[in-house]
Length: 256
Image (cartoon, rainbow, N blue to C red; front, side, top):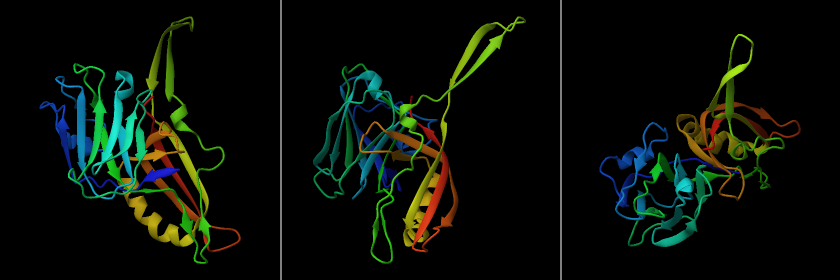
C-alpha cells in the first residue's frame, strides 16, 4: 500500500497543448471544482511540475482513458513511465525514483491524444513523497505492513446510490442514479511506535488538510483519492510497547 504524504510541486506549466481558457495552477488544487482542458491544435499535452526528488506522480479527475490517451512521465530528463494507456478514468498514481537536475529540471506529465481535436480534461495533478507504512522498531526490527484483511478495494467498485420514484400503486415511474464517494476504514496493526509518534503524526497533517493519492498494490489501476481523512486514536499493542495499532476513516474517490 502506497500513500502520498506531500505535494511538492512549487510551480506548474503547460508547455505543450496549452489552452488560454484555463489556468494551469488550478491543477495543483486537490478539489475538483476546476479543470484544465487541453488545446486542440496538437496531439501533445505536456504538464511540467517544478519539483525535486519526488517519488510519485498522481493524476485525477480526467478523461484520458475515455479518449484513448497514453501517458509518459519524464523525470528530470529520464523517462520513468513510457506510454501507459489507462483503460478508464480512474485516478492514476505512478511510483517514480527520486531525481533532480537535468536540462529539463522538472517532472513532466507527457500526454498523447489520439487526435489533435480531442480535449483532454484533468482536474488535479500532484507529485511528492510517499509512505508504505514500513517502519523499524527501537530494537532494529523492520516492520512491513499493508491494508488489513477485509479492506474494501474501492478501485474495483462503482459507488452507486439509487432511488426510485413511485406512483400511487407503488410502481416505479423513474429511477434516479447517483455516483457517490465511498467510506473506507483502514486499520494497520503492529506499526513501530517510534514511526507512529514521529512520521505518522507529521503525515496526518497533510492527510487531514488535503485530498491525496493512495494505491493498494503494485497495480497502477488500484489508485484512488482519499479525502475527509480522520485519524482514530492509536492503540497500544497487547504484548509490546514497541508496536502500535493505527486506524483511519476517510472517503475515497475512484473515478468510476
